[in-house]
Image (tube, rainbow, N blue to C red; front, side, top):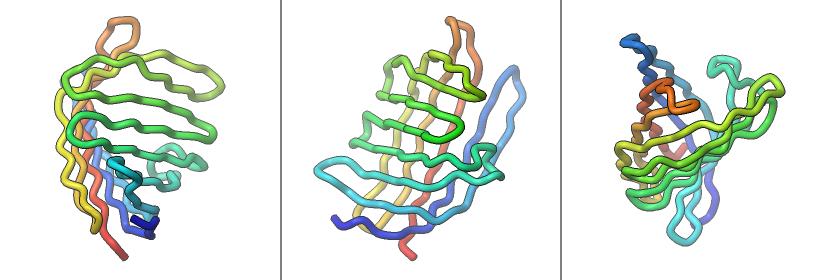
Length: 141
């Protein structure tokens, strides 16, 4: 599948200490499939809090997502369904190693676009930070 320009909608919900916050990002990006992996890539904006960063999401079936962010803020999170993985997060020149426990992945992507949903828990030094839900919708332009 050739790389194509798409419209991307990202809705995230973060819950920490019984308080929830929802964020939404609407942007243009690229989408393609290579072998059994779908790639979604886009530039972050000031609205997301990661202005100047590039994010790439790799989705493999219903059981694995890798999210990579490069630029002023960096991240490399591996999410495998029903597993705890170790990820890296960097901001303001500091790097953190965080735990990522994925509770659910729903991959409804096909060659025309679709949706990707995932819910995961973040922890730092075995202390719970937040529960996160992300829905990414990809539409052809």
